[in-house]
Length: 206
Image: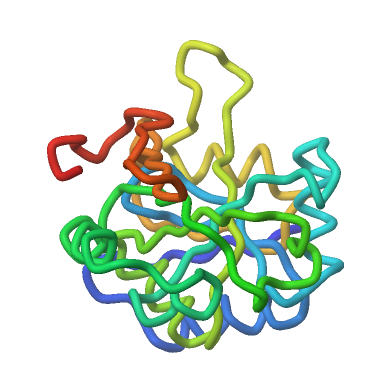
């Protein structure tokens, strides 16, 4: 059964974050808060953990469109081809924030994602998520946890999330109520930005 751990967003406890990082380093799956909906994540370098997430989502790993949660823009260059000045300025304006940017991937992508030409990058405006990635030392791969109820789409109450997911994951973080609107997804892999999904982030910033 999963651990259930309370962490306060305004001042994440370092010892609590270290417990999360230990679970991730050991190949565990963690449900954690972001600036939008709760996410399901694992260490980007752990193949077994990536396969577990793909299995939960009912998809093949090489077909999965997972996002990479990065600590800041310097993290992004590890996995993304060199970007032009206008793209960089847009990212700097929007991040940290409720956006997922699809960018051309480079040769450093983990082997599970080598077939992909693009990668979704997130730098959420949430201290818990950012601190986990900072302490881990590399991004976590992430996917939203949808609710089976078509009306609500995303579960916002961490206790209900724990109830539902406790036998599928290794840790659920209670970071307070989540949002029920996903991130705005913007494709920056072509000549012009393309809005794939209008979510929480304002499209005016584009």
